[in-house]
Length: 437
Image (tube, rainbow, N blue to C red):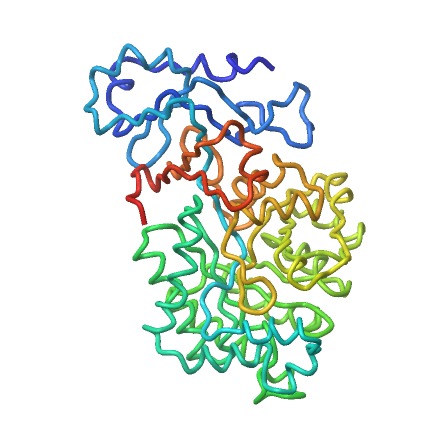
């Protein structure tokens, strides 16, 4: 497929070409759009184009949407119709879709760096838990935090991500484990989205862990989780439902009860599964045609096939793998074999992945899991969008939201290659360039 053939035909009439709200010119674009040859698994009949990339291109934006995408030469004669503040000259830099962090726990109270230090000095997880540490410590700190202090703590983590090109994010509850604190966490997530005017998908994770007050009564707690869900949904706080299906958490039968309530409310589901063992969590989420199954180090090929059939995204989380010094790699080759889309995310949380850099996460995906730079960037854009059910985000294509990132890089692979250098030149959200945060 010849790159110029992909988009040169998209010439519109003069009245349209002179009516855009914003123009981006002289850009190289990683579109991640099948219209421009993106086909990471080369399933199509024509040759794929890496990243769906276009060179010497321009973008016309109208009403917060991408209205036109074409060769630079097609817009050049119309530039005199625009004010200087309507035109962004990319000067050969790269445009990608705005990055999407599709699995985070950034709203939480407290700090667990003391546990990190203790583990390095030889303390076991059991030792830490016996001293009131682990998730119990985060639950306690989150319950005690006011909504204002919880917002202030979480805001810092969100800002770090936005500075690296993130324009959409998922935020989970799950450190409350009671109705009032779950509500507080989800409310803060909504407030963060409102203040920074980016898309926040809120996920109810009541089935995250067993609180101390329900010790040895997991079924009773799951009953409460099921009762809280319709209440929080009615308050407009829930976009999706998650759970932790694992031998140290909840069984597939217990998670099924939560999923049934989600189904009754027409809410999509996703799952933490196969991180430590294989107890069939991914098969369960596939049965419910869930958005994603996340972690997946112990995922079987049988369940991979089920995920492929249900179009469930595999969300890979190298930050937790790195922090826990795990050695069991997720089955990347089998996921490729079955054409399961792979997203990648920070899993930002206080215990196992205190990570607020999606760019570093991409590097980890390459170095730890042998993903390609194209796979991790696709996993932070188009497939991350799919993992959140956001069909109008994650790609540069006419009709999609104009959520974009501008990068000072030589090629898209630089985003996964470089460590510690932030090449972000700016982000656009809903067609508006954002001021430096």
